Image 1 (tube, rainbow, N blue to C red):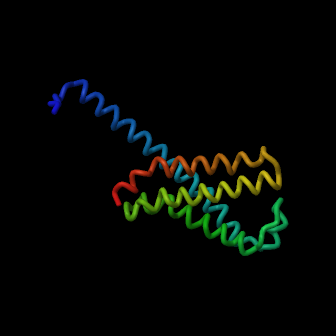
Image 2 (tube, helix red, strand yellow):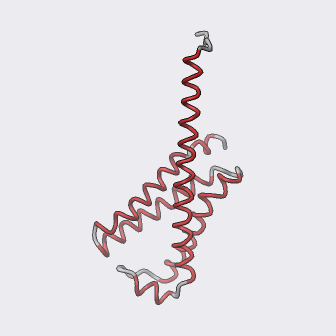
Image 3 (cartoon, rainbow, N blue to C red):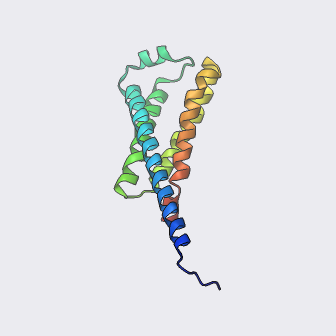
Length: 145
């Protein structure tokens, strides 16, 4: 067994670790808020825009009810990114919401590649990777359950 001695070096390492954790948390919150706003806007637009207009804008035709379902998923995911972590109530739902949105972005990337090509598919791919980073960064919520 090793005796730990509290030295100035240990104190400096602890402070650096706390600062890194604080910076990481701040960055995660910024990404979470930006993604939540993006998904909230996209989801609400899918819910309030007439189906005929939505279908006319799509490169690959999807059933109208499926597009509405995607809108519900996006709104629920946006709320799940913010409220559980913010309120510290069932915080494990935040990484789950991020995982769900990342899965949705896999589908969005595939549909975009099929309908429009590779270059336009970079946007949903990047959004999906950001969602994965939120799920990874907030994974400690699973350990507290």
